Length: 247
Image 1 (cartoon, rainbow, N blue to C red):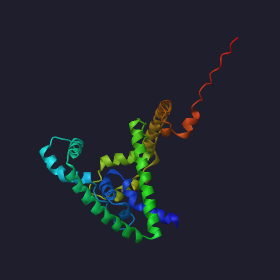
Image 2 (image 1 turned 60 degrees about the vertical axis):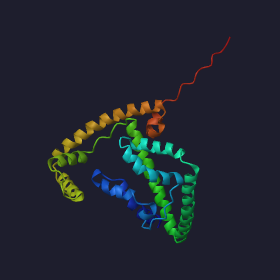
Image 3 (image 1 turned 135 degrees about the vertical axis):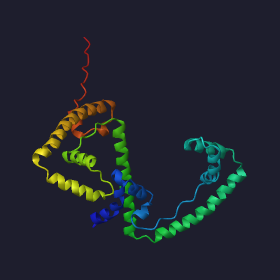
Image 4 (image 1 turned 180 degrees about the vertical axis):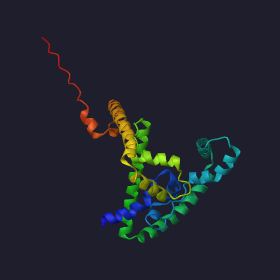
């Protein structure tokens, strides 16, 4: 039962783990709230704080007058300007925020009171799944920044990329195009397949050597979290210093 629920909750996240051809789908999925991803209406939005109300009000004009500024520079300028706003104007924003905050808290309480226990569990599971996906994305980014060698393509992926160059996908749906290429690969003579197998084997040997060197350097630098467990076992323990005995 829990597994079925987990699958139903995770399915809407498949867009986050997509190929380049499905990026628009991932972008549309990422704009949805957690509640929307599990099939519920979005919960009430929190009101803008006094500062963000001010920023929303002045940003269009300031951006038009300072088109040469980057977004970061523009935000910093607004933050400086906010510090000089007189107290009476700040109180106006604060009063608006308090009123909207009271309405928001009331709407949120009404929204949460209508949720069933199962819906609450689905929301929590979705939050955990999203958090895990973000952690994996951050970890992959760290590996790229540390220069981890890229694993070579499998024989089939080499064949697939070669076929893509010969006959681009075009307007054909990706699944149909992939099925066609897969069928062609399955019907390929073993001698023809062996060309891709051997090329992949050579690249894999080179990859294993580069990976071993990279992991040793990562251990020296203290990045143990990016190193395989078996690589850590191969690292010799530090030699203990012998105490000198005085005569």
